[in-house]
Image 1 (tube, helix red, strand yellow):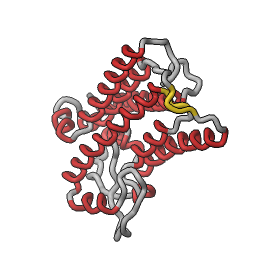
Image 2 (cartoon, rainbow, N blue to C red):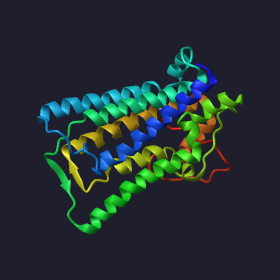
Image 3 (cartoon, rainbow, N blue to C red):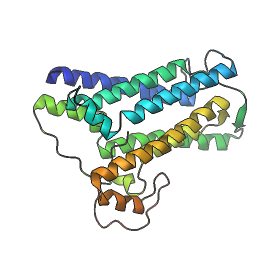
Image 4 (spheres, rainbow, N blue to C red):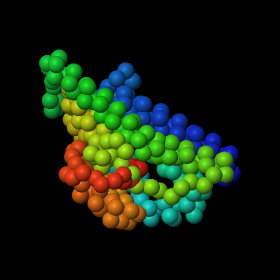
Length: 255
């Protein structure tokens, strides 16, 4: 794969990712899309549960396996190193697209329904806050590197990227995984929580917790004592800061 084709490939992967992300927001919030977490062709509860669990499992496996350092070391023997992140982003976007397309709503039973306008408004505010935290966090650590564009652009222009640096800008000083925090806020802030939405929220929460365990193991292997110290000082998903940091530390690219 040449430098120009790798750059075009990176742009396509980034475009697919943005499309999937924007649709995901509408999907989870039931916001004006023909098929969402609670709206779509009816199916039996048993069929819907099995299909949805398989889709969630496929996404979790793809997302976790391709994010591991050991897989990337093997994978870059096949694809150019500069296109590795774009390939990951494209694969994740396609699997997410499959989940959004084939998801089977389970509208009953309704686990909770918030009737009051004030309480409903608060939940919608938390929903949008979650997506806002997610987006802001990507830019704090380097949005374009996280989604693979920086790598393919560097190859196109003949530049060498500096080695990974550990720093904790902005919200990373108070929570280690703000991207995951944003997802959790968005997934659980539902004025109407159906059985299908609850299944989605529980499964993604479980995946996030498992993913964090693997990710932090990789980060310790990469940054050693620096990340161990950061982990003792800053909360994983609940913002907290147990002692003042003596200096700027590195930020982590969440996958």
